Image (cartoon, rainbow, N blue to C red; front, side, top):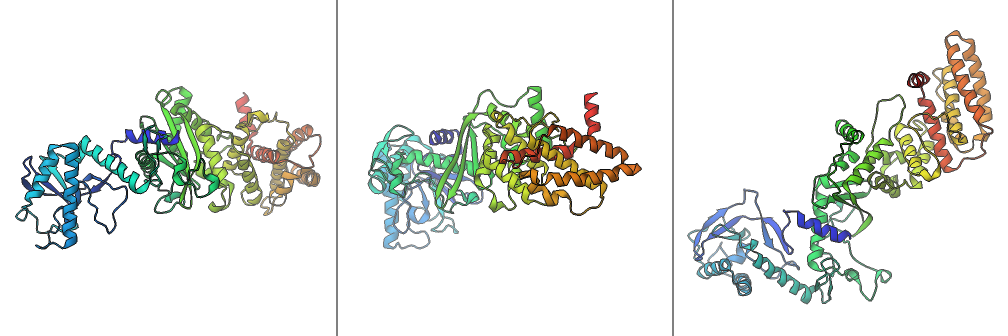
Length: 551
């Protein structure tokens, strides 16, 4: 499915050359007419134009191996810098001519015949530019037309390369899993995936390969384990590298690269919001869902492939096949679940920003965390428990900041992505939530406020000293904390300027304690997450705002 969709996408990209053809810049065009007469040389070296040329399945190194119709001047003319030809130069010139003759015999194309006539006459001395060198790349143009764009000539070259594949690269002929035709099966990927951004090798990383017997089946080894012909292997490799190279078609999260496309190659910018949620664009995006004016186009198919690299191999981390409508709804839900009523300016975070909140250093980020948050944002999958574990772990370790807004957002996302757990986290403090863990978090926050108000300027608070223990073993610390809180409340009650504050804090303390029958001896991982949410939402709670909303 993955490779088939990549091949289908390759057909929608007008820029792609046909199979077994590539693109490159050319120095000069040899202009001839139908009679094979030279019209002149056109210098195109500075024009930035790209021309297709016939590429060899097995590249040439030191051996003599001409390209069809497009090659270096030393192949076309043998030698243009000196009058005499060496034995090798004679051979290169002869082989170049023989290849064109072979193509004419197979296609009977008039343009090829015109080029043959020109090469047979080869009277070009008066027309050659003084600065033309043997290493300059030349291409033929007959009456202004590029012969390599003719279908029959392309088919000739493709059949020739398939024959080379059968003789030199592979003797395995089978039904291709993608195109369904009986063809020579690729012995290795002709187009390796360029995954330098996620640790891949500079030469590329193979998608299909087997280097151990445990990966082999039916006696097939190497790339034969998946019967893909050379043409299809070239197409899906080109499609993947095209997407990897295009900023508008990729999203890097941690050490995973997401490449995405639509069936008809339509423009989709939803992933730009996931990478960098620019305020105005995101506001318009969220408003479109509130008003029902969504930006998706019917049920246009949407595909996303998550890749990473392991040495010289490409690793497929995830494959998503859905519609633009579903993806946009999931992205909308991702940002909606991020909303928190915490008396701060509305903030939204890209996936990488949230992922970074689960570890101190980039290298410490767990791949499963990045993968899970991305899957949640793109396809609505429930967040993995690893997200909860690493978020709670970071909160305990970060003595300076503890429960930040993005970490609280992650915890909210986790619980709301698991509705079967019976926990629905709201945007603001939920005074009807009677979970002991949530209540303990609220209580811890109230005690912290009491301490800070009674002892302004205090450097080390109860959060600095007791958060880890309070969030995992409440029974062991809360008794002592409440006794100290009573002393601080007495101080607030005695001072006229803080009497009102005393009554509010005393009321909050009593409201929470009424719901708590006893302090739990220990809290599970999920309960520690609820503790953090209770702590954050109580800390952000503003009673005057709550009353206004009620009125």
